[in-house]
Length: 101
Image (tube, rainbow, N blue to C red; front, side):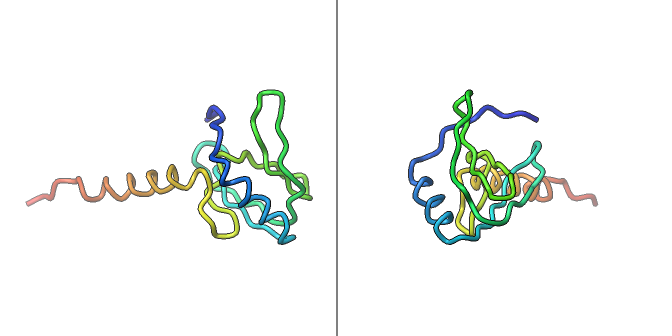
């Protein structure tokens, strides 16, 4: 599932910069659709492609679209609320099921 890029709050620029300065980073993010993926290692920077999508780049060549990051070094990222809504929706279906007699 392809999602359109959503520009993120500039507050994340400092969070990404801090993660880059630490040398090692761990990012949990949405890969394809709602599949969770993980990137680990040294962040080399943020790059913007021709479509103006921004990617957090890791030394091993992994590029993570910044608006799909759920958490970075344990800090909620731009996609955390989407992740939380998805998790809550799954729990909600357990509560909405009518009980059988």
